[in-house]
Image (cartoon, rainbow, N blue to C red):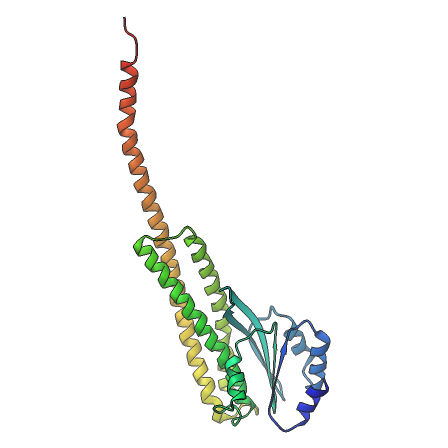
Length: 270
């Protein structure tokens, strides 16, 4: 807490990242140091929040959903809260894993504009990192759908195909729900006249908005593709069943008369 208070008292721009939301007292202490509204602290620890933006006189508060695949290729959706102040950015996340490694690397290597264009540019860079990982997840999903298409056309479908399709459908829906509010958030930032957002940096937020629109279009296309794949898969299963029934019918047509003949000629006649 003393270190945090020290950073706030300096004129240097600061990014403070808090891992884990179970330390409520520590978060409350940070809130007091940075005079954050109690409703913000409540939203930070409640991880079921919908992505949103709230503007206050001295800071801007944003909730986003980070998405990424873990080492086991499971989709992770995690809430991250950002607070942009006069000379600081605070980020609160559920766990240690996040999508900000590229931002840390640029800061550590003093690369690019991050150390020169103010905390609003850092605020943009963090949001942009979140959006970039949506792209990575979207691309991975697109590859999975293409693989399913190839398997369907070659007839090499595994037994888990239905389960894979259902998982992709759910993941696409989750991502769409996370992306959709992002458009409104960035649109609000683009239109704001808040003192913390330099007009010179607005072009970067415009770029993020364009990326979000492209992402939304891609996700909608993938959802249509997965529904189409499901229909094609069910049709292929139905066709296979019809072929099996035809074979069984033919076999029955051949063997039923033979059974009858065998029955007749097997009787004893006087």
